Amino acid sequence: MKINIVPEPQKTEIKSEKIVFTLTHLAKITADKESEKAYRSLLRFIEKAYETEFLGTGKESVELKVSSDIKEKEGYRLSVSENKVLIEGADESGVFWGVQTFCELLFENDRSLCELEIYDFPLFSKRAFMLDCSSWFFTTDAVKLFLDAMAMHKLNVFHWKLTGDAGWRLELYDNFLLSQIGGYRAFTGLGKVPHGGFYSRADTEEILAYAKERCITVVPEITVPDRTTAAISAYPFLTCFEKPTLVATDFKEKKTALCLGKESTYDFLSSVLSEVSSVFESGVVHLGGEKIEKADRSGCPYCEEKMRSLSLKSENGLYDYFLSRACETAKSFKMKPVFRLGELHVPDGAICDCESDVSAEKAKALSVLWIDSRYNLSLSGKELSAKDFYETEAENSAFGIQALLPTENVPSMKKAGELLFPRLGAFSELAWTKKENRSFERFGEKLDDYFRLVEFLPFDHAKKYGSNSFKRAAEKIRNRLKKQ
Image (tube, helix red, strand yellow):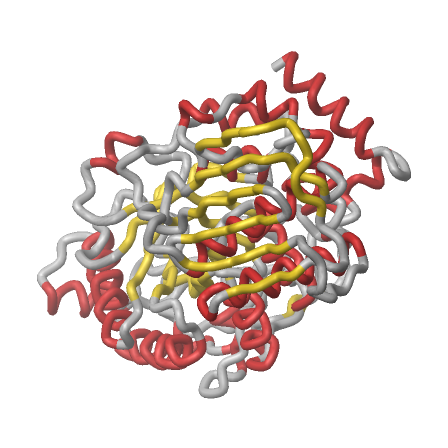
């Protein structure tokens, strides 16, 4: 029997090689109230994979339940015995992740399992994936597909980048021009064609419900005060000199940015966050916060006056002031803010997002929670291989770990799939599995079954290898991994 689970479980014990359980249409599946999401997930998988409806009249049974015996948060125990599968979780999420493992086992072994027990729990409590929908707009159905990929890999935080220079994707009723104007640009550098779109309130609620059903928390990103060209195209008064501008048509850093001296800037941010807090339940908002050196604020009378009134000696001090006020504004709406770490001070009470240019020593010195975000999936396989994920060890002092998919050069789901797989699998093991319980060589051995499972996610990324050739694709990648 094969046990090629991605991410690798913490502990697997095969008690007997004899097949003791085979899932048939007669099986009885039960779940307690806290395991209903896991129950529905199991039914969705079985319906898609086997087109089976259960009668519940046979001797085989599958039981899902929350149990106080599982001590680790999000942990689960999967036990297979004679005609019975029992999946117990520490909580709702634990049972859900246990079901994902059960589905992989069924798929790899044609629904027939031997007697075994898997005891599993995550290394990091926050296992995040960032999708940049500002640079490139993905449809609601496409975003759902990314969420399916997250659930398959046991990732639990969806960082949804919704604003930037190239587009404002979130509909807000009180500031509707942000999406109506800021959601569209005349052309892109990829094909020189018009591009745009935004998520209506109904779209957003649909995506949030879809994520919640998969035990995934959604954290929106509303980027301020720089990288805000799309917002300024709708409301030029937000800038220092109120010059009209257009939504960015390329991905170079822009000079246009929010004025740090005008009180109207802070009023605007408060209005936006008020509405964002009413839509998103996570209680967390990412506010960007990185400074663009080219930002055109030199000579602004509003910024100069604000600096004089606060006795600030540099623009960096004004940036720190803005971030502090942004932090307090978010907290006033019961949202915990996240900022990317640069040379600026991270306000007390915020979470720090540390990217690749930040040393581990610097991150450790922070007195705030921080998430390790050094894993950029938009890089080519030559620039960042699956092996690189294993060799870039996440810091144990981190609050969580995050993979990023900036989409400046990702104009299709096919391209996204080429970048995601199998590196998202490698990342999931880094986020979930203790170092002593995983190995890069072991990951390579699992690729055949991994690609077969990933085929359920219709990114169409494997078409470049030819029809029905996942086995060849896995072999090519495995050979390439061996040479690295």
